[in-house]
Length: 630
Ligand code: AMP
Figure (cartoon, rainbow, N blue to C red):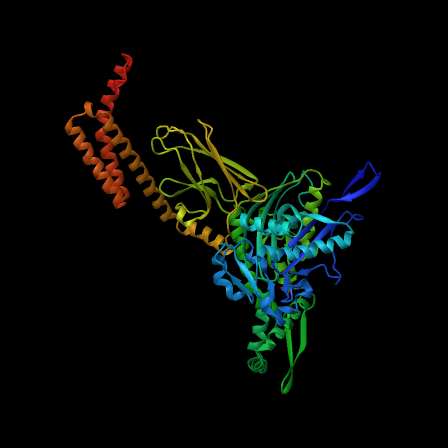
């Protein structure tokens, strides 16, 4: 991981370019490196002897900034200046998170100057990128202390479903913390690397990465072959995790203990203590069969001492429905990947909640008793894998490629507001794809290229990523220019689009850095919508196509009549105009069958004299003349 270079002038050895692996998590963050002695990845401890840095930032009104365990007490002491779960805001606009504002104890605001969300603390405003950079700075600092060297290069992990805006925001946070982010790696890919999967070039495996943390759940299906990682599908729930297990225990205790219920009614502030007690119970039941405690509460006038118990069996009954939800997600991910459970060779367990026995059992059962990799600390496994990737990038391992997939289709808007997909959903990244288009009007010199992300046929329902104009195309008849639109999606999921008119060489390109990203729910909703509206979308597409074709035929017909007036009889011209009018009306009315009928009538009628004129043109051409006498 460290690159050693020799200073020829001084004859000294210079250690430089440490690359660290960072798991920048919603609740917890970690930094890891490869241990020089063992060659194995290891997470780095802070001065508190803990490897985990809670992703909490305290913005002290006096200007001091505290991160991690030092910031934690202020969640209760000064909630409006204590920021948590900032990862949920990365790359998002105010509109994206407005509905969930109540979930944050700090102020999430929209200052109308930018579409990216900001957080207000006192009279200062912070972006999620800045706030994340404080966590990254803390991790950088702790790595520098442990390595006694400067650290300015990192690999950072993100959820596989993060879109380009969220990835870009993560990269920017790294930059702001003084880190050159060499690679953004998907969390499930990192977890696989931590278990050494994919490091052997001969290996070919399909694996499932089951990640159940405190507040989020993700399942990813990966295919590993020839040292290449390919995410086949992902699914999950951004608000499901160990916290729900704790809540289930709290509710059970309240429902079965009237005295406790009364106590909580009188002193609601005790709820937090009860939650912590429930978490203790849950953790203990991962290793023992029974939990017992005295819930002692000292309030103004009385001391209450209530006995609380829970058996593992009962705990498992309580959380069974929650675990079942994660299994449903696994089912969906397998379906999306087009696989059956027996196709999975190994399962990797990530996140603190995978220590729960029932979780292990249910996952094992679902995946047909396949190997469960849970020997590494599930809280550290993603950071450890990021360190392995850092090691690969430092050139210390055989060439290993990392491939991921794009979660939504990418394409451009074509005539009639239709989505034309250039890179389909679930394509591997990096990816490059190009398609040729042409103009619909004679002499058209400008073309607007609008780029969208989503699964619907009607671009209106998809998400616009950006647009640009291709200008200066030399005047040519409609259909003549050959415009090649190329999409290049890089390994970090950032899209570059270029448009080139091949006959003239006129070219334009942009890097698509969307202003804000999608929430995970929106991503899911977009996918669901596309399935639920498949029929409606098909009707929309065929109507739009019929309209576009009708408009093209009307345009071509009027040009034809104009050019060949002298060769046509009045009846022919009048009847043609009549059919054009009928087609125009059908197009305005928007009835597909009528459009197709009117289209056919106009076509049939004009065909006879078009053929006649064509024959004549050929005869004239043979005589060395063109039809309009030039
Ligand atoms: P993570 O977000 O991956 O750090 O996971 C944190 C979650 O794991 C929290 O809900 C913890 O309560 C839970 N957790 C940690 N240790 C255990 C354990 N021994 N048994 C069950 N759950 C645990």
